[in-house]
Length: 200
Image (cartoon, rainbow, N blue to C red):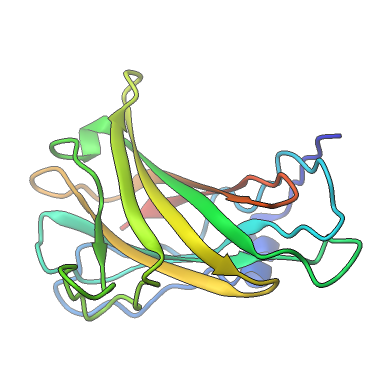
């Protein structure tokens, strides 16, 4: 049966570890201290030995190209609702990042940073696990654009994974804009984790 959780944002912020990163001079954006909506499990079909692919924190930093918004997201296989332990590893996951269309430039996939190979090095952002790739970018036709980040690896119960990325912004970049982030994983208990943050 579906369940919905409503928490006090300030309380949720302390529990989930949302933190403001000290941003270096010239940073393109930073996530503010207050997140308007956090951690909403939309469905919980089973809680056996299954965890949940939960957004634990999101922060910003400098980017190699000042026309890009830069960010990093940390996710956890949160097994605290499982009735048996250990939980199964999450092997695939999807993160979507949705902007208002007026706040972005040409619609193109996100750029993965700090993953080695040909990915750009962005000193202010944490390293990306090599299991992350950029999916597509879609103009939703309703005034929003959604970017997809794809996880394919093995994330044990209470394990964490990080993805740092850049998204081409408007010229000049806008400030004070809302961004909605969601995550789902498989196998998991059906939880869809969601946050809405305001960029610098």
